[in-house]
Image 1 (cartoon, helix red, strand yellow):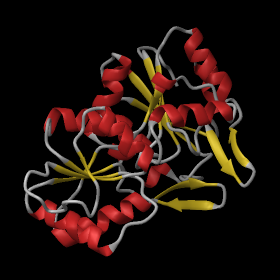
Image 2 (cartoon, rainbow, N blue to C red):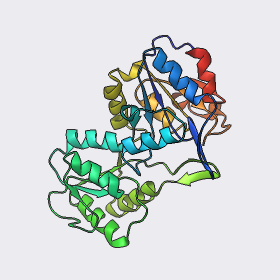
Image 3 (cartoon, rainbow, N blue to C red):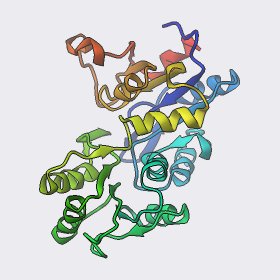
Image 4 (spheres, helix red, strand yellow):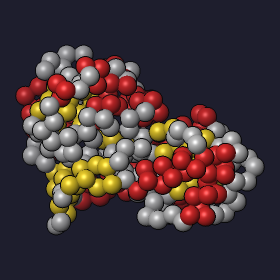
Amino acid sequence: MNLDGVRGFVFDVDGTLVRRFPDGVHPLRGAVEVLEAIRASGRPLAIFSNGSHMPPEEFASALRADGLPVADDEMVTPVRSALSYLRRRHAGAPVLLFAQPSVRARMAREGIEVVAPGDGDGAAGIGAVLVLHVDDASIPQLEGAARAVVGGARLLTANYLPAYAGANGPIFSRGAMVTAAIAKAADVRPTVVGKPSKAAVQEVSERLGLPSEDLLVTGDDVRMDVGLGLAGGSRTVLVRTGITGDMDVTTLPERRRPHAVVDGVEELLAWL
């Protein structure tokens, strides 16, 4: 694959750069070398995980501890893209937020008026219901969120795809489960602010300071990662080390196919 014209890079995390095993997270072969080669070329990169269980800085710190060199400002998650979306579309409006305590605190520090599930659900003035990663949610909390949406709040979610790659098979998205329950009750279609979405395209483009057409997006999920790249007109690479596995991409509609398929991220070294 010819990378002439590629001025920036976006990588998925799980199944692309690392795998999660019972004994911890391990970088995949070539992952560290690929990131180092890109940095040596002077081109910017972003590491985009759809994980929203912690703030992006904590995510980057955890990856560094597991052996993957990621700077805080290179780490992108739906927490970042959701913040940008809320500032653009719902500035100053209260947000009913399903999220972990550390993420809730981070968003409050960023100036978002956070309303916790069960605390003022359905109240007038709620601008958005935002679903990030949660470990549990009660039926009354879901009902309250649905009432807020019926009352005019926009339903936002980090991820509406069912699962991502784990060591022992798919890991189901709890955030998508919660979102689906609210969407069904309120009879609406949620707006995705993580991968793949226009909000995510805009976030990586602004973070890297480049038009999305100048980026290469690499990941293991043909819907989530390749979908992100195609939505922004980027070039895309699908790696077979994650959830997509040995899918025959020729069975996909041409508009959804990646530009290249590799067995592992280390194969990118020959193109850099």
